[in-house]
Image 1 (cartoon, rainbow, N blue to C red):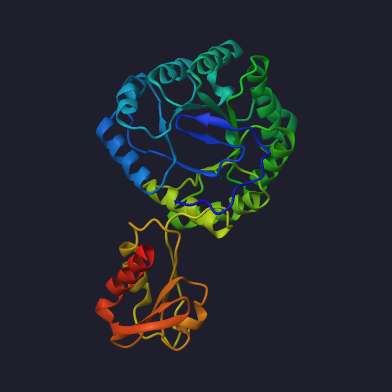
Image 2 (cartoon, rainbow, N blue to C red):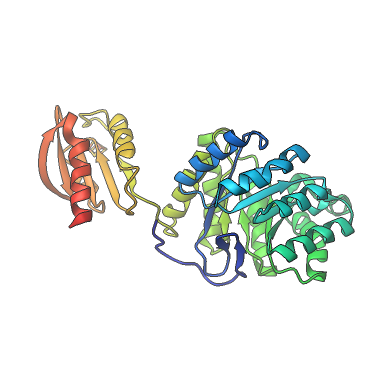
Length: 357
Ligand code: SF4
């Protein structure tokens, strides 16, 4: 994995296990398992799939003591920076910290008294564990919500400010902040205000973004605005279903903004009346074939030999489909033609040859 650009050093760097968030660190991509955490095998299997997709931090839900009890076993079997997601019961946060997680996510608004929050902060301080203080539009402190009448950006930031008091009183340095909403404009405004006000690293996300396609598009629109302004130190694209596409979408957002590269990218043409091959099928085949290659190469899959190479001049490698055969091109220049059924294999060979040259 390569990093094409580092970000401005505006936030404080917070260590999370073997990685770090904020400061000059690249924007980290994270996700969350959706298995029952106490199903250790299923949870570990999903963590491994997320890791293979490039996920850099994984959060697991800790809804009860049964889930908290298996955390030491999960910790033992994975090195990925592990985050425990806690609501309502501060004892679960204490158990997670004892189990060796690297970060806990709490919403101080629902964790109980200030004393309980302080107990969690002290335990985290002792063990070098980070804490994400996360406020959601649906969990704004009651009196703040009454003042603002509805869950707007200002209300989320004010609620966050109150939540931060015990952390600041104890001089806790491992804070990461988030304020999520299903409203794009509220999310953007809240993070803009947070970025002006604090130097804590910011975890970006749109809550309950939706199904794979809709959720990825909504997240890209909102997170893109913020990231392009240099706001955001780690992202999670929340999607309903298998979490692996969250990681893919996260890296695609960063790549589209020129913030990070992550392995090869496959571009494909939209097809038109000149198309002579099944471009969608070919693009999927190429995506599968280049999955194991870690260089940040641009590969174009185009639907015709007439305009394809020219249209994909910026790509490192490409295929332009024709009837029964296709042209293989390297940086806009056709290097050879071959039968359609061999073209993907030839492309991979060409890429490996270039890598080993
Ligand atoms: S590459 Fe060819 S087939 Fe694809 S959109 Fe352009 S002209 Fe049409």
